[in-house]
Each structure stands twice: as structure tokens, then as C-alpha cells.
Length: 211
Image 1 (cartoon, helix red, strand yellow):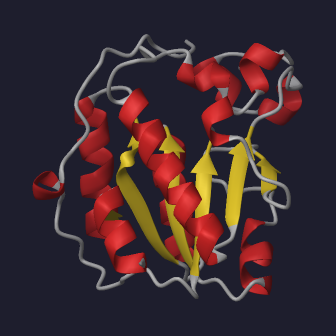
Image 2 (tube, rainbow, N blue to C red; image 1 turned 180 degrees about the vertical axis):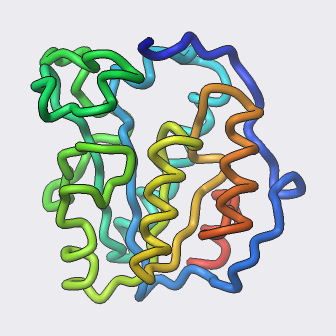
Image 3 (cartoon, rainbow, N blue to C red; image 1 turned 180 degrees about the horizontal axis):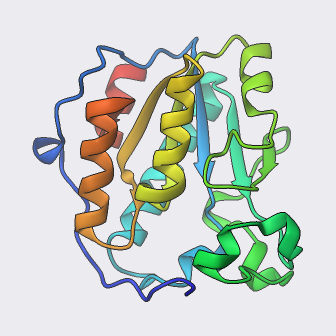
């Protein structure tokens, strides 16, 4: 129960990405960016100065900078500490009580601090859409595409991509701006998304398309 210690592994390259079934391409006027669960509690499982975490953070920062200069809306997810067992639900059976209400648990890391006006959604379940107004805020801003970054690729990131698809929101996952428990889990997430619900792309490819 609880989070594992995560051994370093290399992030996938463009040549290693699965071919998606979806024909979608990200567009500046339609896209929103999601920074998913980049809190100290979740990232403590990694070696801070090694892949996948260090380059993934750098790539999220690049995407953030681009989106902020182009007026692309940015959203974050973050869990609260000291969750009531009744609110945490079945997650407690798989992952234990979760984070405590401490700065070293709940704080989004300094490199990715939300800017003024960016919304931090309270995270309740794997998908960022569950018990949140993410879709409403996207629709109000004329956005029907979502780019997912963060942790963990095969859990909350995948769940969010799948739910975006089920809400008719075209979904993308930044394959080298997410991290996971292992390279096998990481690759499995990208393969599953590519086959069923979204488009994996590298940060370089995303920035090239969105320039």
C-alpha cells in the first residue's frame, strides 16, 4: 500500500511513440493545458536529479511558458491533505490514507508554480474531471482540446485522457512531460491512449505544431 520508490528510467523519444488512431492535431485556439498532480508528495518517489522526473519537469516548464505567452488556458490538479476516509473512498484501499496537510506534501513544486489566474482544481479521483468543473471552464473558454502533463502516466493522466475522450474533448498526452512508476508502465499508458482515446506527442513536436 502507498507509493513505491521509483527507479530512474529514460523518457520515450519521438521514434518510440505508438501511432495513434485519432487524427487530431493540437491547435492554439482550441487547446488547454493540464498540469496533473505535480505535488511534492507524489514526486518524492523519484530521484530528483535523474530521468524521468528531471527532464519531465523541464518539458512541462517549456509547455507552460509557451501556453502562457500564447494565451492557452492552464489548469492544475492538486489533492488536499488529511482527506476524510469517507471522501477518499476506495482509493484508501489501494493507496492508503494519502498525503498529509503539510507543505512538503501538498505544495506544487516551485519549478511549476501556478501563475496568477490559473486554476488549481481539487483532485478527488484519478480523472481530473471527477467532481470538478474542468469541462465547464474549458467550454466557457471555447476549448475542446486538452493536453495532459504530469504524474502518474498510467493512472491519473490516462484516466483524464480517457474521460476527456468520453466528453468529446480531443486529448493529447505529452509523452516526455509525464512520468510513471516504470518505463513499462509509461509505455503501456502511451500505447493504450494511442489505441483508444488520445494522441501521444513529444514536447518538441507539440511546440512545433503550436508555434
